[in-house]
Length: 120
Image (cartoon, rainbow, N blue to C red):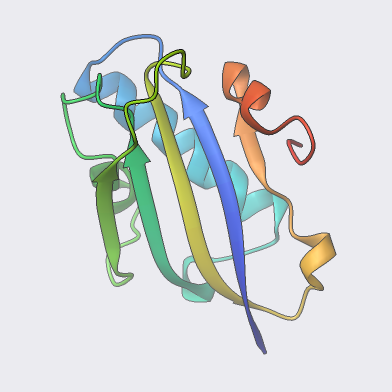
């Protein structure tokens, strides 16, 4: 079994805890489904949020989905002028027999503009 990494992002419409939970939950669910994963396959997840998001921790959405025994950490994205606002990004490490080229990176909604080369 190999260690793989999967990326993803979602842009929130507003900085509200319930909205963040919903959107980050949708992102994590899409990552798991598109890659045929269960929470047992996860090793860890890094979350970043742009500096304009402070209503909640993105990792809280993972805990509410039942991802309770996986190490999670949150950090703030760089505050780069002109960057897409209200974005939560993830970098999840996992165990998978899938070749690296078959990992489906997930960029939902307007966040697809961040990585048009790999957005699914």
